[in-house]
Length: 406
Ligand SMILES: *Cc1c(COP(=O)(O)O)cnc(C)c1O
Image (cartoon, rainbow, N blue to C red):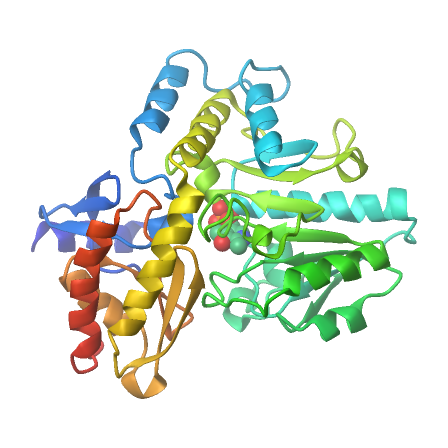
């Protein structure tokens, strides 16, 4: 038995089967490259679902991690630490908010936003107790807690996990009339991804977020943007909402906030929302810990100093054009923004999975999403030369007869 097979068997034996990874076992990474245990080199075109926007093991981020690890790693919020304030100050100024509440995973940032906006609804807006409603979109992905999967429209995410938290109303994504019709006096917020990632790289109609903002303002409800995947440069802007010139009332960040080395997330808002929290209302043992703060701060420095949003915009534009120019008979549509690109495989050519397997054979790691979509989302530190190499391999796969499932 080869080493790869051995390691995969071990995981199968000792872990729950809640994932279906590509059959590659990675042992090392640097920039946009990773190496498997057999010594094969691959281009990472998933970036851990955009958690590795700054590239694997960015030297500045690793230096911050190591330096902080040698001084102090965890205090809990029972005491202050000397790193958290400066990190949140930097984050708020960069993204344009008065306050941030630090957590660890994306799902926790979403839960934080839900709690903040509900409490704002009762304390400030004056919604009757327990009557607050949050409007959400079909095909959403906001994480995996029971509250969050309770308002998913994906049957598999929910099946067997009920009963669920009430107070959420599902409407079609990208449909501004549906939003207008769904708003009531009890609406406290509209939780939305400015571009749906896990849902299959779905770009909403032009101006959608702008109109959503106007409807929320008129209804005195909070526009809550989940930018956990789209934020921090991925789509060619610091926030994807900036494409529409929109500053949401509440924004959730995660993934790349940890620079690919440590889980760091946050919920950002102004005082009217954030001041609803009193000591003891909400918290996290690890949220805002000094290691996370030092890493998060370095992750933001890299985004700004290396102009990663601008880079994503420029390279993404060019790359999407080149992907179209392949002229594949298997491709129905190519869509996305910046370096968040989805190639939709025609149903007559099978599903996206065999295409991902064929790409892996040629040294490119991409992952299918929603059956028909191959997502290309490389680290934002990638260069045009490396993308050109990738295009040659992608062209070979997409011009050949449709690959068969393994
Ligand atoms: C990944 C993701 C989350 C959940 O983040 P976790 O860190 O996995 O909990 C939430 N929202 C969006 C849009 C995401 O892409």
